Length: 88
Image (tube, rainbow, N blue to C red; front, side, top):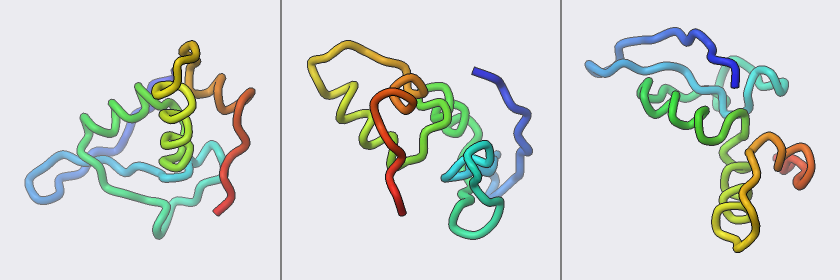
C-alpha cells in the first residue's frame, strides 16, 4: 500500500488529518460530508487495515471476510473480485 503524506492539523489540542469517506482516487470530492477530521493514528490504522475501502464497504468486508469461516482475503482484492460498491 502506498503511503501518502497527509496534512496534519491541530483541532481541540489533538493532531488530526482529513479522511475522505469516498477516497479521492475513487472520485470522492474534497468538501462537505465526504470529509471527516480523524486523529492521525486512527486515520493511519484505518488505511492500514482497510486500504481504500469506504466505511460502507468496510462493514460488508468485515461481515464477508472477518466474520465468516472462509479464508482471509485482502480488502482491495475482495473489492475487485467479490463485491460491487454500494450505491448511495
